[in-house]
Length: 225
Image (cartoon, rainbow, N blue to C red; front, side, top):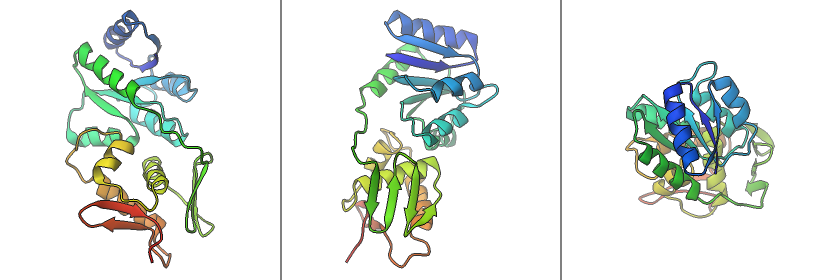
């Protein structure tokens, strides 16, 4: 694999880079957020390992910028912040996994290997439609009835998944795994909060609601009746 490592701590970067290279991986290292952002948005990597606290540009900003640009490369976020709110913040920014320092290299390697095994989301459609709602994956735009709707990167990913599964019920677990790529329940209201925000933008000022709660099951997107 080709790995981008964005880490300003020399001891940590040497530890991770040397370990990965010993296992046959190619590692490109950036020692600050500005250089890391430039390389990350350039693409060409299989996995990115990004420190949250970086000089010049912080790790969350790098991840948000990547996701906003449509770059879906798996990201493992490294941090000294171990609180649940910090983990959720990182995942909401678009990170795929979260590892708290200090860590054992064996766990880091296991998490990287797990991320590399996740199949990429493949869909031939550039434009998704549900009624008068339209999402353009290439341009990263959303309109309803010709009116532009501004979404945050994670809101866009959530709507994209709902529209890809339009007419079907998607569960909270499915959303955690496929939108946040979070394979255990963080015990927070992250899904409910984002659904509420998305409803306010997509259904507000329109006669017909498109995002529906299926009691006891999950959510669905589509025209009823």
